[in-house]
Structure formats: C-alpha cells, structure tokens
Amino acid sequence: MLYIGEFSALTGLTVKALRHYDEQGLLGPARVDEASGRRFYAPRQIRDALTILALREADVPLPVIARVLGSPGDVGPLEEQRERVLRERRRHDTAFDAVLQTFATPPGEIVLARREEPEQAFLGYPLIADPQADGAQDGDRGHSYARDGDASDPFARADVDISDPHWVATRVRDQETHDVTLCWPTSEAAVRDDLPGFITGVLPARTELFVTRTTDAAGIQDLGWYAEALTRLVEALAAEHRPHRDGFLMRYQVRPTGADSWDIDLSVVL
Image 1: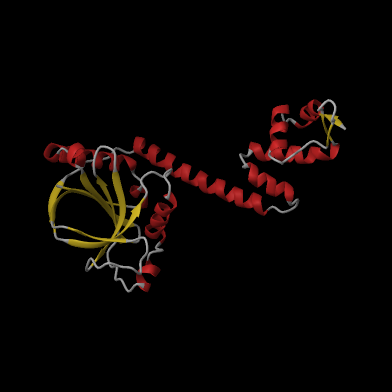
Image 2 (image 1 turned 180 degrees about the horizontal axis):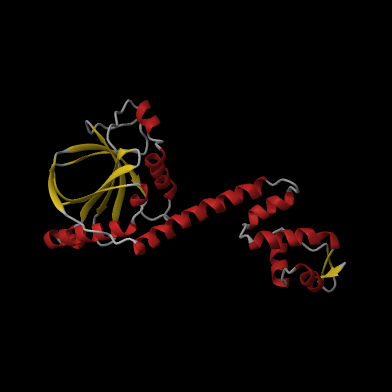
C-alpha cells in the first residue's frame, strides 16, 4: 500500500486533488486508517489516477471522467467530449478569423440611402439576447430554424408559404432592454396556434435608412464592414431620433443571389 504522499508523487496528482476526487467519488483511497485517518492507495489504482490526470489536462469534465472510469474500454464518452471540444474550437477559429479579417481588410466605402417600405406581416421567433439567461435554449433553437432550414417542416405542416429570406430584428426599447426576433415575411398576420413559440406581427409602412453589400461567403463574416455600417447607421439615426431615449428598430437580412453570392441588407427604421 502507498501513503497518499507517495501516491501523489508517483502519479502527479496533488494531495489536494486526491482528496477532492475522493469527495467526488472518482478515486477514493483503498484503505483509511481509522485511528490516524491516514489514507492508503493500492498500486492497481495508479492506472485510474493517470487516466484522471490525462483527461483533466484535456479539460474533460469530472462527470465524463466518472463515466470513463465506470466503463473501462467504452470510448463513447471520450468521443462525445472530443466532438464537443472540436465544435467549440471551430467556433473559436471562426471568431478569430473574423477579427483578423477586420484588421487585414479595410471596411470600404459605406453608402447610406433611404427607402420607403410597405406594410409587412411576419411570423417571428423571439430569441434570448443574453445567452446566459434562463431559456437560452429557446433562442438557440430559433437560430437553428434560420441556419439549418429547420423551419421549413413546421411551416409546411402549418401550411404557411415562406417565399422570402428571414431577417433578424433587433428592437432597442430603452436604456436596459432590447428584443431580438427572427422574422419571416407572410401574406397576413393571422394568429398561428399550430406554430408554438412563434408570434405574429406587422411592420407598418415606414421609412428606412439602409446600406447593402454584395459579397461572397467570406464577406458575410466581415466584422469590419458590419461594424462600420452599423456605426454609420446609428450615428445617422441618432442625429434625427435620439435612439438612446426613444428606442429604435434595426433589421439585418442576408439574401442569396447566386451559388456563392449574397446581398447583405442592414437597415434602421426612421
């Protein structure tokens, strides 16, 4: 048998970590002396200790480690964790690439224009603005409707004709609150009980200040252009409507125009 200090030296797990893993039910001592309280570990526990050490180096959560230790030879939990890590890495890479592209590529000239838009009925799916807020999963589901085309099935089942691309509407209501809604244009604003979670609404006839851009797939992630366009729009809006006090509505829409071509439309309602 090995004293806890000896076991710590051999495995690389600190005494504090060993005590913690014992409390978590991951790796308890093989024996505890009732009189002295000393903890002893068996040589056969070295494999589990080194497995824990390696998985913690890979930032594998303790519940996943418990599944691995509880089912030796079952690599399923590890493969699931690896895929989660890879998805997160791809998300990080996309974010870094967007920032690097901002530094490498000037945003270019931003030309603002005005247009008159008719009344438009829509179906909307409210999103959670704060990803840490309760119910954020609902917002994620709404994003998947737009991103993966998942909305086609519920719309088809409800016999709703969606012919134009959706837009993302951000309405700033006051200094502390705002709404984000995925909106699909419809012919009428009828209440839809067969589409749970969706809302109906009507954009009234309005004047919009807008900017558009035709781009390829990489340009859709061009943070520099988006930041410059949004800045110019909000500055122009502030000069007329003091949005920090009265609130404002912004719309963002991406419309495919070819195999690798999209029109980006960013607008604010005057």
